[in-house]
Image (tube, one colour):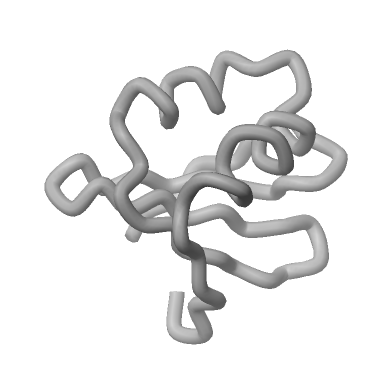
Length: 72
């Protein structure tokens, strides 16, 4: 999945596949996690957030199943 760089102290890049509702988040340390069942509106809100890292911690991690991706 293609990811775009974002301005964040915690997140390096974000990718989204609207066909599968999967969201990829590459953290500054290099780890990539894929979150499932993420609606397009949540992806839009993430990109518009003042703090992307805080949004991930508040609105992504607690609500959507995620797994580390090693072949991203």
